[in-house]
Amino acid sequence: MSDGRTVEDLVIGVLGGTGPQGRGLAVRLAAAGQRILLGSRDAERASEVAAEVAQRATTAAGGTEVSVQGGSNVDVAGAADLVIVAVPYAGHADTLAELATPLAGKIVVDCVVPMGFDELGAYVLDVADGSVAQQAAALLPDSHVVGAFHHLSAVLLEDLSRPTLDGDVMVVGDDRASMDTVQALASRLPGMRGIYAGRLRNARQVEALTVNLVSVNRRYKVHAGVRITDV
Amino acid sequence: MSDGRTVEDLVIGVLGGTGPQGRGLAVRLAAAGQRILLGSRDAERASEVAAEVAQRATTAAGGTEVSVQGGSNVDVAGAADLVIVAVPYAGHADTLAELATPLAGKIVVDCVVPMGFDELGAYVLDVADGSVAQQAAALLPDSHVVGAFHHLSAVLLEDLSRPTLDGDVMVVGDDRASMDTVQALASRLPGMRGIYAGRLRNARQVEALTVNLVSVNRRYKVHAGVRITDV
Image (cartoon, rainbow over all chains, first blue to last red; front, side, top):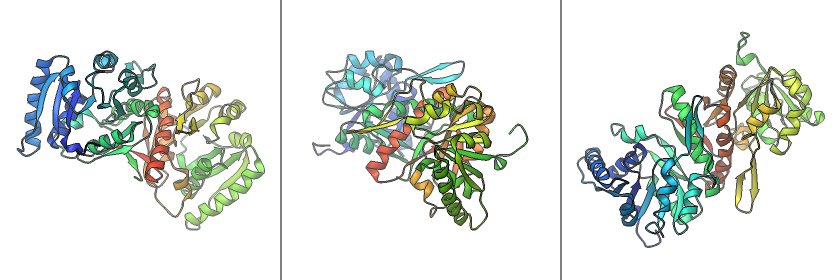
């Protein structure tokens, strides 16, 4: 961080933190010692889930105290230092359109996947801005938008009986300092690395590859992730 | 194969076999014992490269005889049992449009990436059919088109001083038997596995992810590939 803080000092907000992906990221990051603000449209529901996440993360952390609090998405956006967007794609644009002011000047990490399902399985939804991360950047002109955390199985994130995860976090963005911070945050997940993976204009295929991982999961009965080799 | 042949029995044609990706796949598959027909627009050039590839593959195979012969793309398309398309994207449509008849009934494996470069680095080119593999399928209505081999570094493929590669081959397609054959072929590359990765409509992001790997390569000074975890 340019202000001298390290990633460990940051309060991480998770918008859509009551969904599987948000909850999974919250519990793993909390267990790693990161302070978490868990956001939802429904602040009361957020507080309930935050209490559960805190309990599970404390157990996983061997009794070390963790910090997880719940609140509305707007309160979390305003109070957190760095915000992860884990809302459903259907609500992505509407949610962020209302948060441009509280998110101004902050790093916003988008992990939303534009995925639909039909009788042939999963497929990629078109996004007018090219990718969900680019949609976020268009809606949040004063934030530093980074794409990351797309390929992490919510099931494995939430399964704290497995202390170590297996995979890398591909990080895309246009602001190098923000990407460095997000890569460092990703590397706090046990067993994972944050890997620089190009500019925001190349976010689409990183998001969309999650659709292929769904196909892998169905075929092999696994929870697939991605590892970048030779790095 | 439905006719009782195993993948080891197949003669593999490589269109655009004089380029780095085609040559790299040819030398590795030849060293693994696969019979190769190496194609180019220029048959004489194809024969020259085939002789070089045969020599290097023989050395890598410890002196075991290998089979690599050169010819025109059209002759190779007609004579091979399975054909890998490794031509430059700019020539992809024109090349395949002329080969629909010799490729009818065959498995056609497309590894072409729609990639451009500008002052900001690599980016993904739009393909009217959605992906290069879908473009191949549109041009070759009587072939079984499969997408695969996009994420393999040509540098590492050609560097036979490294006997083992590190990565997986994501295989996309709509014909399950053809995909099984291509997965088996990919698994003949030492250290690699062919992984089922979804339908042809989800080929675009597999192709396009290569653009991100180029960004990884530039940032970390590596030759990145992809490994699918939990499989």
